[in-house]
Each structure stands twice: as C-alpha cells, then as structure tokens.
Image (cartoon, rainbow, N blue to C red; front, side, top):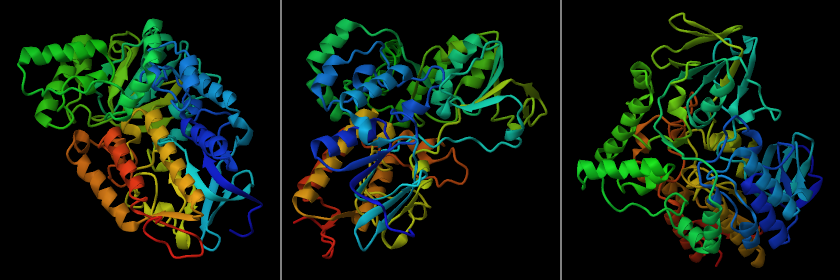
Length: 548
C-alpha cells in the first residue's frame, strides 16, 4: 500500500450479520478493544439484509436460530412462527443491535477492498471503497458463507427488456408479480422457497429446472406459545444438547439402522418424520441414511414416491423426481407447498438439463430446441459462489505479499476453518473447513466467536503479537476434512459444497462434515494443548509452536 494508514485499531471486523454483531459485542464490550466494523449494506442483518425474496426464511426452528450469549435476550424475545421468516429475523438482529448499542462503531455502505499483512509492524493494513485506510492487530471476517451471488453468464442476459433479479440481492421495496409472466431459473433453497409464493400472484410462472430436488415439508405455521415457554425454562440444557450434536440442533439422534427393520417399520418411521417435517426427517429417522448408500436408497425412494403422489401430472412428476444423486448429498431442503405448486394451472416446469437455455433475448428465454418463453420478469435463484467467493473479492495478502486467492486457487486451505497459514492474526468465522453450512449457523458462529475471543484474550494477557496457523497442521486438517467427506453421501453429487455450481471452480469439499460436537471438541483440545498447531510470538522474536 502506498501510504501509511490514518487510524490504528485493535481489531477490524468485516460484516454486520450474526457473526459480525456477536464479534463486535465480544471484542468491544467484553474485552474493551478498539473495534471497527465495516458493512456493505446500509443496515445490520448480513444474509437477512440481502435475501428478501418472497418466502425467504430459515430452515432451523426459530427457538434455535438466535443468540445464546445473553440469557435475558433469550427469555424476552418472542418468535411468532415455527421457522423464522426473513422480516422477523431482520427485526431480531436490529433489536440486538439496538439493545447492545452495536451500531456506534459500524460503518455502513462500506466494503473492504484490500487487507495486507505488514511483516514489519505485524499488523493488518486495510482499505475500503470509501477511502478509509486503517491498521489493525486483528482482522476478523464475518462475511458469510453464502454472500457472493452467482448470476450465470447466459448469452444475451443483458439484452432482456423486462426486469431481472437475483434472490440474494432482492429489492427492499419488493417486486410486484401480479399478472406478470415470470421465469424462475434454479430450484435450490431460494427457488424452492420463492416459487410457491410467486405462483400465487403471477399471471404465469415458468420454472427452469436443471436439477430436481429432494425436499421435505417444513410444516411451517404459528409456533405454540406454550411450547416456547417450555423451551425457555430449559434453554440451557437445550442449547448444550445442540452444541454437542451433529447439526447444531437439539434433536434426538436416531440410533436405529434403516437396514435392520422391516419394510413396514421403515415406512412408518419415514411417514412419521415426514409428517413432523423439517430436519427431523434427516436427523431423527435412521442413523445411517447419510453414511450408507443402501440405507440412503430407502429414504430417497420414499421421497420420490411422495413426489409422485403429490404431483398430479405423471410427466411433470417424473421431471421433479431426483434420480442422479442420493438424498442429503446436496443441501437438504425443506419446503411449504413446493411440489403442490406444480398442480397449479399457471405454473409450467421446463427441464433445462435435457433442453438447456440457449440464450436470454429481449423478450425472454430461448431453449436449445428453439422453444421461446416470453417473460416480463426473470428471477435468478441460482445461488452463490459459496464459502470462498466473498474472500476472493477482497485483495487479502498475507506474509510476503502472498494473495489469499492464489493460495486457494486449487481449493481453500485452512486450519480448523478459522485460520490460514501465512496469514497471521486473521480469524475467519465459519470459514471453509468448519461445520458452517452443514449446521445451524448461530450455534457454529457463537462457537467460533468464543474460540477466537479466547485466543485473543490469551494473546493480550501474555503480551503476544502474532498468532499464525502452522502449515503442516493446515495440511493435516484439510486431509481430515476430505477423509470424513469421503465417507458420506456428499461426494456423490455435484453441489455447491464442492463448488460445482461455479464454472472453473476447483472441486473440493469445503465445509467440515464431522459434526458440530466433534468439531467443538477438537477446538477445545487445541486450546487446552496451548493452541496446538499455531505459532505464537511477539513481533520481535521468532515464532514458536505454542504459547509456552
């Protein structure tokens, strides 16, 4: 960087969603550090600030999709639905920001464009698109795993004369679909959530589907206050159970095998889980459907039968039936009336796997066989450049000027998903190599914030300036993550977990699939062993393997 930073800070935090808000509170209010938060939006909320598409909501039940660091907050906030919808999550995060006065050191409408480690000063030098130049001892990223929108580069995309939107950058004023010819490209999570809602008002809705989805009914509705009152009496136990679980949710894990019961018993279990809805189908039915292909086949076939039962037109039903990948190999989806929507007279399903989109033209979408679909609005429900996309948009340079995007050119390399060898004092919240997107995010976010804060407290108490992941520890962690992934269904589908939705992106499994509880235990072991796998030192002395 050409000139010296104008302001010196203890820490810079990127993002003001769940991760950034909690980090701000932990470092500023609990540790007393001088912290600056930068947020690209003009308000708090992170993913829930940007994703305002029709039907947007979280897949985790509302009583678990919240902070646990403040017991009064947990007791006083009242959720209205079984699953928290986007407007309510945004109200919650604004309430948290107000309650703890978190906005006073957040600079909105600001993107960090560069962060360079200075080997001489042992500090991060940071620039923003607003001209800020600051220096910080610690750089903490709370930029989200799904925050870099993927808009496919379809021929003629910019020639469309109508309106077009990506679900991850939705207009805050909303979109009026009344009587319009609408096309939705994509049937991932945002597509599955938005399609039923858009269909209710659109004149005609055309869904362009490349990959059929397994999706479980959410059974969404108003939450029973008596249930929430009971939860609040036992929040400590419930949250502890979630922290030790596989997915960060307090469900009783199934212990039975799908292969050790009769066909009748198996069907009854699946029917009960289907009727309960949500992730209980995955976590509460059988223990081996995510690990054993034979067991998984029973769950996959059960869902296929449900699709054929719900969708009245047999030809449409067969287009919606997933056959090329097993259940849970892609992100498990839950829905409200998704398959029922294809029974509507104003909804058309187009299979673009066998008849791809040739171009977008001024009047709509043209397929390879020449079929033209005239549209007024196109919705890109095409997901994100997951896990690494937002990192790669920032010029992050570590020791010796190495660019993070170059280091990650063949796939992300991290230690514990929280640190990168060669990038001292950079801490990632739910980064690649951590449970992140395979878990209930607030539980994983809080665990990372607690661990990072603990590491910084250790450094400050011991007069240490530098904490850096060991290169060999990093290699061993990445190998461990991939070894675990190889034992699951995850490697049997082209998913965004592997970066398969982005042309040219390396096929590497990015999140940690061993479960929230096992990951927490590993992090605690690292801490107890004097931050094993890290080099800690003052800036004036050579790095040592531990703090001792």
